[in-house]
Length: 118
Image (cartoon, rainbow, N blue to C red; front, side):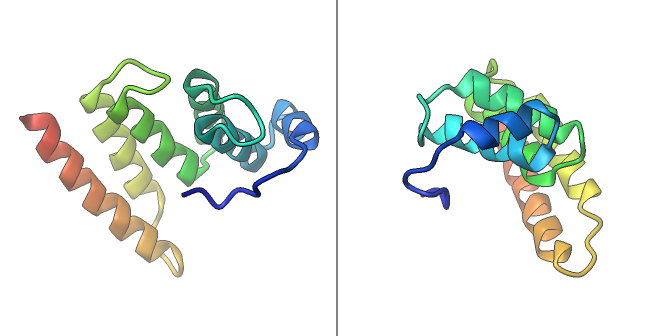
């Protein structure tokens, strides 16, 4: 279940995403991934996650890894997924509130790496 509002006008979100705002790119990507307030479109979601991830947005980086893992919006590629999860884990820094995120990314990396090795 997503934490996105059930109904919202994505016009402002789209405008800010188009202007390069990483948080808004991530948010609009979430909308497209889940089909909330816009048609579900994994390819658009993945492009938006990539744009936000390229700016260092950790949740977008994680979701990009999920897209590769699940083959949604990108061809399924477990090696790329593990690489992205690893990058997210290393980028999180593990300080303050980021410690839990780093632990989660590290845990997921181990899980996905095990699956990719099969």
